[in-house]
Length: 377
Ligand SMILES: Cc1ncc(COP(=O)(O)O)c(C=O)c1O
Image (cartoon, rainbow, N blue to C red; front, side):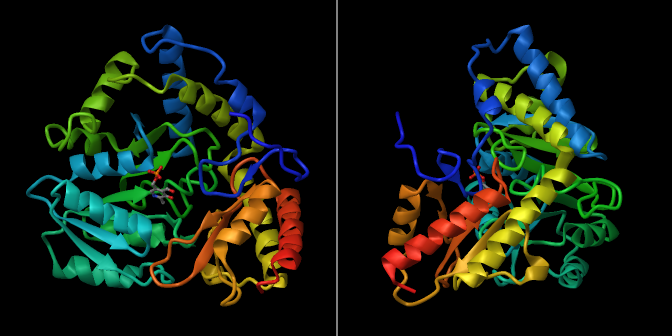
């Protein structure tokens, strides 16, 4: 398919979305080779990716790759980690916490849910009380960056509480992995957690393309999944055990996506790792919020809880229509995202992927032109 070339400075469409996102030309070029799934080339790529991901997550002991999107990995982990005699506590303050609930219902996983308002991070004190009161809860699952709003949950402090009560901890870091450092003294720390499974996906802040997700785990936590899978393709223990033994996926791997991801990992390293990438995103995010405020848009999340990944903005007036706003920006080559909040009208702009503060300036200028054209705020 050939897409009309937009008029922004890059001459290419810019995805201001939380993944898929704009990728580098070299990541795209890496996919122009065919490799077989049993090929030694593929085995080598899988090995490098697993090692590369573990290097980004000190304290993790092993890594399992799974075909599919981020939700597939969340579904697989919850379905294998929590047995029929266990009980999962889901912390929910947005669409992705809610997706865990939908997964638990579909997979008949015994669970309980704690819901916080969409603009409120989970409170470790409340978690402490819940775990104190209910000894039957064996696992706690939580989203790090809730993409619905762009809000961060305090994984480190929540992990301290999970550790105090000796329960297992599952973290969905799908939106943040690759742009927030992991390790000693950081917010995400496998020891502090103690995180049993941390889930990420190929097309977010590592800046690959969609097609697989990954799970960084403690080995004992993967071993504890043996025989507990609720579906064959989602059997993480088998996938891991097979990968350890053969270096391969159990079933057909997304070969081109793996090649792109291997290149994306190299580029993340060359940029200076998650810390440096996080700084680039932060700069873009600060520019975005400042410029949007000047244009009449207010962010939904309080600055102290806001991630540098994605920002939800209130509609600026009653006359504002997201569809015409979106279409005008689309013509200029900027792709933004609708809102996902339950009751409040918002839209979202992400600033992850191959773009920087200058691209954000280009977007802000385009929004200025759209404002004059639409006159709806
Ligand atoms: C925090 C979080 N969890 C889960 C998902 C689901 O991932 P996917 O849409 O790749 O299935 C997303 C997707 O944006 C996400 O941001």
